[in-house]
Length: 118
Image 1 (cartoon, rainbow, N blue to C red):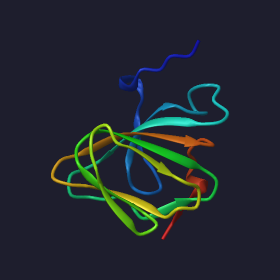
Image 2: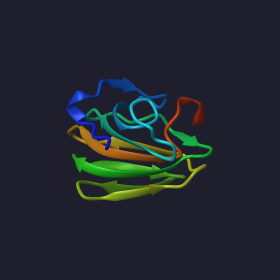
Image 3: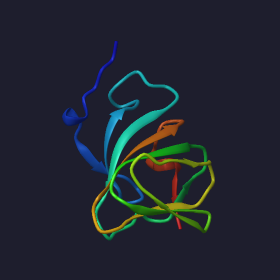
Image 4: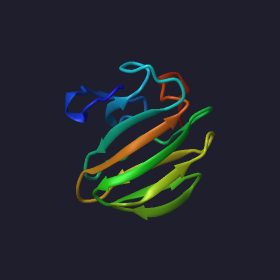
């Protein structure tokens, strides 16, 4: 059994500029097909607009209000919202007046090499 606690994971900055803590991925567990991380986008900032050639992503908003952009379509998001980001879709998320905290699941697992900036 593999159990990882979020508080024991060190944060790092992804290629799109978001600050994440990997919860489970190939760096800390025998993961093959997906990754799970907590991401934080500080109030008033956005991730860089980007896409992933192979990874499908889910975002699940935990705290804060923001705006999700996928292929030019904007929608306000908040706690309890789950967002599907298909492979190849240009996207970014923007935090409103407070930090935006969400879970990010990628399949296959997140990699800097599969992140393409605009």
